[in-house]
Picture (cartoon, rainbow, N blue to C red):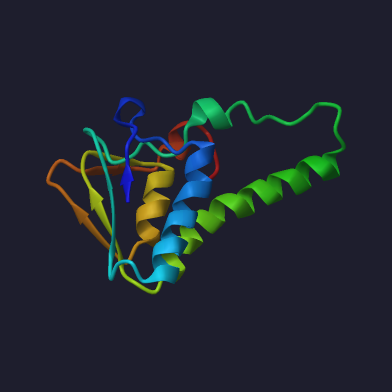
Length: 134
């Protein structure tokens, strides 16, 4: 499985969060492979969540606080399900990391069974630098 948005540093868009677990579960269910390698194109493995997309996901100012929190919980469970699919796969899932592995990408590779990094790889939990709780 290859992340292929090098021009956007392989950031994780809303489509990513649905496609990755679907692909992992498909390979797991069909037995198409004995191992999955999670890789990417470009200089960096992934810059994590696409904040340009997710930053727009603010709540409706007129909505009830309970509905906003329920929606937030639902969204978080959806995001967590992506990495749970990797963790629960019967076959080994390997991460091939080059360049930057930032933010949510660190969460993704830690769900993998093994991680292999090139000499130029670096890891950064960017959320702490922008005041975001992970």
